[in-house]
Image: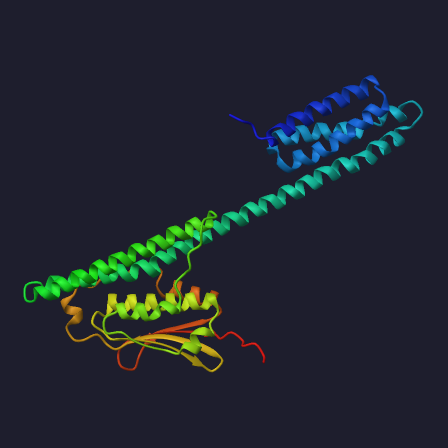
Length: 328
């Protein structure tokens, strides 16, 4: 096993400090001792920066003592105790200064490690939300289509075959979503990048939702920032997934339009047809829901509203600030 260079700093400092203390005791030439200080001070900083606490403390104490005591023989013969203490205190300043510099660098490195760890955790949470936003939409479609095919297979086999085709298409899209997640992981490791879906893919998304309608103002779409654009798409995915899950058979209306100085993205549905909820079993809740969605929208500078509509359906509405247009 190969030792890291930082593991050698404390033993080297301890050995150098002991040699310096022995040299001070036996009275080697001052020039040699002073040259040893030029080695001990950087070693003190390196030990304080990188060495383990236990071995670093022992080696650091020896190093500080060696730096403080080397001038004592110079003033021992003719100097008073006050002069000896003053000489030791004078050389204690660079010794503790080197320790302080190394300690500061150690603290900064610790902060950097914590920042990297937090960034990785945030990225993992982001990937988990991406999987929910994109894969859950297609998986819920697969389950709903499979349930519907089971009910119509005996009366209309042709409808069952078409449902199986839609299940196959939804499964392929779910695989594509997982591929995007893998590409995102590769991007984090320095691999090629993959664009995140935005409102440009909204027509395709609504087409996959049977009975859905789309009213999108292209000018309003262009006035969204990149972050708001991708977040708006996730709002649409989540809202359509919830309609399919909790109100099967309901008609969804998706719109993107200007609302004063803002851009409004809304997904609404009327009440589900009578009997739709009774024919199909209720699906269990999953994912982060409105709380996670609201956090995404807030992070993109927008606001999210969700609640019952006048016609008994449900509306999810996200409002994002429009980008300022350049003058002239």
